[in-house]
Amino acid sequence: MLSAARRFWVLCHLYLGLGIGGVFALLSLTGSMLVFYIEIDHWLTPELRIEMPADRQSASLQDMVNALHKAHPQRQYSWRLEIPQQASAALIARYYRAEETAHLDFAPLISAVNPYTLEVVSNRFWGQYPMTWLLDLHYTFLLGADGTTLVAIAGLLCMLSMLTGIVLWWPSADRWRKSLSWRWRRGFARQIYDLHVLPGIYGFLFLSVLIVTGVILARPDWFTPMLEKTGTLYQVPTVRSSLAAGQQRISADVALAAAQAVFPGANVRWLHTPDDDEGVYFLRFEQAAEPGRRFPVSRVWVNQYSGDVLASYDPLSAGFADTFMAWQHPLHNGEAFGLFGRLLVTLSGLLPALLLATGIVRWRQKRKVSREKTKTVSGF
Image: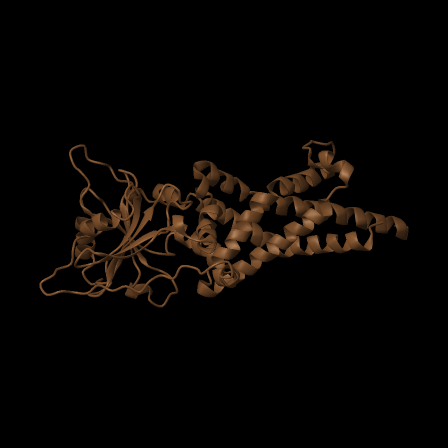
């Protein structure tokens, strides 16, 4: 006979698992695929795989910007360039003010430029091809900006479900070693139980990190008031370019050179062209000690006419609050620990589907035993 307390935790775990388990599995499986989002997108989209000519060097950044303007003369605002990191990669450019998708919360035009021929080889809108659709599903349940709140709430319920499982599993002091040992016992019911419990216990730490970082990324505003008690969070400066008589806009390459002087040796990852006549060049660099690789937070703002550095931000000298926030995305997708971390996150994302499947089988087994006992007591 179960004690009242244990029966309470059993019911909590059961109903949370049945109610949120499918969502947990969905978020985790989509997250596993998104860890290798860029690689999968290149595999699905052959035109993004570029052949490097033996006798040609990559064009300048400004040449690639010019190619975008030539292909899209009506798009006069800022382009956000993701700088190729491999010789076989295209330059990916985002245009956030596309009229075709202005009615959507987030659906920029994504163009790809061959850095050798300057041909625009691909034009796609965010959400209209597999990997971005998958990212929207993972981040917003395809519900736009409002969906992030539902994702965060779902994450908190998933965490609660896991905690109830830990409470039910928690062994007495003399049974810790046995409870943590992996074994393949005889009998289907025992095997299902072990497949449900042991992966959940071993994966608890990794899944907890993924859930917590996911909730913070979905709704950072829930956590910033607490973080600001430890120190002021960095505020992005408002900077504008001032035009002197006779000055022309400098090239993207000159702006890069000016910004590179702030972080010598750092790897440039993103460059935003100016949005208008008072806009600035905005660049993001990856320093070796940063946890983020694709979206690092070393930033520089450059006057589009004079090439003067107007502002910069070095995360390596930031306080606790900013450092904490800078780690969330790299922890969530595993890139903070290189390929090993990404593979670990991918494998961890498979666990909730296993827990859901074994949990349902275990529940059905117990229901079957309960019905048979009822029949026996009733005399059938």
